[in-house]
Image 1 (cartoon, rainbow, N blue to C red):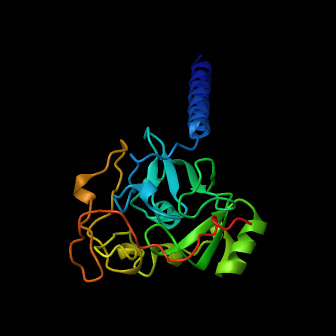
Image 2 (image 1 turned 135 degrees about the vertical axis):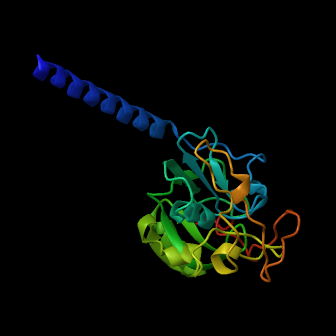
Length: 238
């Protein structure tokens, strides 16, 4: 009798584990790219995402109804590397820059960030004026971009951590000049920029002051004009 009861308990626990696994798989499958609207603000820059040039990103976190938005792919990748950010990520999407406008990537260009190829170290600048990791769905388009703008092609898992986070290895923070990543290339911010709590809300206690190159409080957020000059890759289609 005791053996039978133990067998039933083990079987029950196995069934619960199987149901939990199925639930997690269903949650991942449900994470499809969301439409980018003017309501979306960058997780680190706290500015309207669509007002920025270049490729952007969105990350879906388990337990959060809306995606976390980013004004650049570099910020998107930083989120996945920082230990203080949520790790229950169900999907990461970035813009495929193969045949789209650099100024405003098309709404149907979202691709899986983990299967994309990236050109790093090119002369093009991302939405916040810093070096970008430019995503492409196919190798030919990535090679063509690198040949024109410089840089090298790497896979998702080959992107150097230092290229994304800089020497400081901290979260991005943007100063008054909006010319670069304070957390990536400048001063370390106080606390983590926009850290998400378990329920998906941002913790006010962890939201940092925005510092410029000299550590002064940043100016009121406005339209960003820090992108590099020149014609965008998407504007000159292959």
